[in-house]
Length: 347
Ligand SMILES: Nc1nc2c(ncn2[C@@H]2O[C@H](COP(=O)(O)OP(=O)(O)OP(=O)(O)O)[C@@H](O)[C@H]2O)c(=O)[nH]1
Ligand SMILES: [Mg+2]
Ligand SMILES: [Zn+2]
Image (cartoon, rainbow, N blue to C red; front, side, top):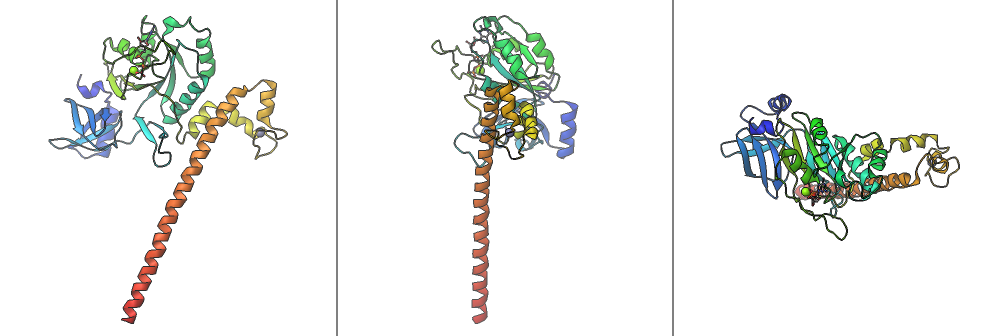
């Protein structure tokens, strides 16, 4: 099997390339990026190229020339992105492209972090990929009672697969979920066992793994780059560094996917502009009071909703500032032009 097929090339991708590029442009896929360098899979093997930072792991790119350069990428059918920590307004950080399945990895060697699970599911749905929850370290599941059941309940209909890289459990099922030409990216906290699972699935020691710290059970951020790993048969995995947090970027659709039941309640509030706090006839507050809606879940929704609202407010302010500057520049140019014309007339 040629290298490109191993990295998920299919007839469909071939057709997209013929549609978007003239002949003479060769298809390739970004396997990994490293500040100004990219590693790409081509029909003839792996290449390391210099490139601007506009390409991300998973991209299908066009190569041109004898000393090949990347000339562009195919439209992305899924995109995982988040808000940058220190540069909140300009651009999101794009983590990965063209993922079909997003594995939300939940380790069974620690208590479940419900908020993290919900937030990751919001981002996963929003990317355009289909989320699947992957429980890892099933051999340690007796350490904390009820995490499996709790995860299934919290995942609300998203498929949950249970695995153990150590004992070899659930590997077949997971492998069976990734079809030819499909890519599954693993997303989860450091030390969750993402790289170990990839090694178990490929039957090698391709990805470095690291012990969790004895003191608090957290990982050591062993994996440092997003990287595609072929499984053979054209199924592809993406290993990613453990996430500390995940600040959302324009993720309203993902939020509606995960919390659709809450958003449906809004229509039943007495006032159409209900803030769902102390208003009489608030459907949200009455659902909490009757036990139909868990207060923790409502607070989790509200936190993410406010985060997105504040992002948009700041984006709008930045946009207005930008437009104001452009307007002032136009006025100034017009004044200068008039001034010039007048002088010309006088002269
Ligand atoms: N008992 C047990 N330990 C596991 C299993 N999978 C992984 N581990 C251990 O968990 C630790 C962390 O595993 P990694 O695969 O490095 O975790 P990771 O999610 O890739 O972590 P980062 O790269 O830091 O994000 C290692 O010590 C693994 O040996 C498992 O199924 N069972
Ligand atoms: Mg890792
Ligand atoms: Zn209300």
